[in-house]
Length: 612
Image 1 (tube, rainbow, N blue to C red):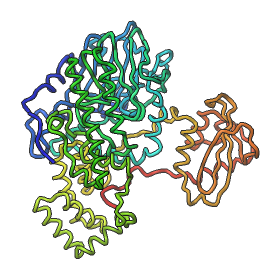
Image 2: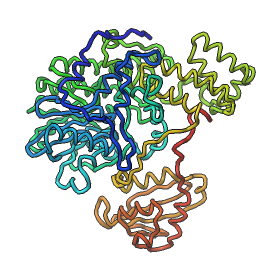
Image 3: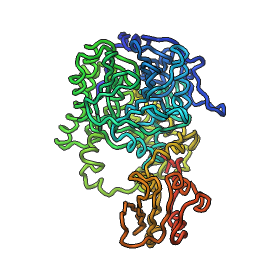
Image 4: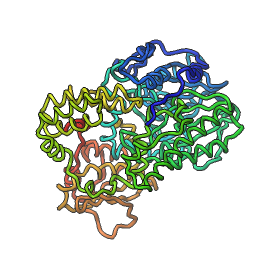
């Protein structure tokens, strides 16, 4: 692939990132009630220096841009707080107060962002909240702008399907995603030229309290108009783009366009490295193209929930067209090469951006990359299997590693050969070979140290921030073991946002199937506050190790146990409290509940990644 870069002499991004600056949070540190630090933007002051040998100069430049922190005026009546979390919080002044767009990840950072706005613009009340899409960095801090009790009568707007996708991503595969996210975002790495210097989309994720207030107003179609606190808004639904539920929207009276996370100053992920459902690059390009036409002539500035705005109608069109072409090109060329018989790994080596896109700073792979995005598109269409029978039934990693090491002549010879590849500059194969040595014998400290050194060098050379963090985090864990805090997505308010079917799905995912193979039981939940009204009966069936559930109007057969309860009581049961304490109505054999819960497992969020 070409290593040509855009011109470092082009200062447009820096000018735009600094435009409208009103003031910063000083110091740029946010703490929780117990004094623990949940956000420290001042830790990135080292980025003011020249780029060292331990970082890619393009990524260093992106880090300098992302590390800018403070309150900025986008246009009259619209302000952004940037640099107080991974995402931006935008505030639009209305007739009585202020509309908050995307209240960051954590309650603590959102509260600090709102305080910074009020310091410069006055103590306006929050009169509405808009979630642009269903990722946690765009809703988690909502209690920082609407404390408990303050949400009464305040509209919460979100795209249709928001709640289902917001919660399911944090529950169904939440443990594995959270563990991998610690690599992706460099959790536990020091902020330094040799450590974490950002994530490309922003600097880091805050580590405070996550909250969620369910939406009260669904945006269900493109062209839908809403007025909140006197502010007119025109919406464009963009499902299946950067998130399963997402939307762009226009403030026609401000001539300002919000692009959510559909167009940012980087090539985004088609499949995030923490794991998620593969996004549709084709539909992503389609909705960006639709935005160009649908909003044409009605804005003078466009802003997003990451990075900095773009001013000037023509400049925005050029930006949107470039972003559109990025995803369209990746999609179409991956399909072209796929249909010529190339595999995902091969396509990742063959594909190259057109020069005009490669020379655009916003087309660089700081967060997504050409390599893993093309593999994701391949995966979306053809899945994990590349068609080669040799790859259909391979050994799992440890067994495969032992055989590779044996073929190489033993661990000592494999280590020596890996070092020769390292000396020749083939870091990629050195990493592959050393990974096999470590998986064949995780107690081989010499191999682990050598692999850590290779990962470190790969990280220092990466333009993609998340690749850098994965490599450096892997090196750290090879040397120190599994350390560092994990982001907590099990906040009680997140659980409250789950619907009863989602809660039951989360239980089903946790059932140890083999232990439950021979059991057969039914439990009815008679809900006092169900989605279809009091009295909804939902039957749980454990059969052949699978827990399923459905609504039954008039059961043909009685359940072994029937519980009459509300959602709060159900949450109490799932938290381990007993039936009597919670005041749950019981009919039948209460021992069935204990039997069911005996099969429920708890995932270990600190599972190994770079060792078996």
